[in-house]
Image (cartoon, rainbow, N blue to C red):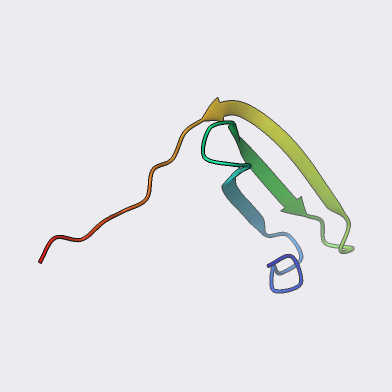
Length: 51
């Protein structure tokens, strides 16, 4: 995913196993440098569709 992120882009995602995820922000600078900021603990659940 980082290779696909354009310079100046931002990726926000939960990182970690289901029990202990951290909301993480990844910024890619205009020169291609990567900065990672871990924000807060979160717990995302799987989306399920009911048909």
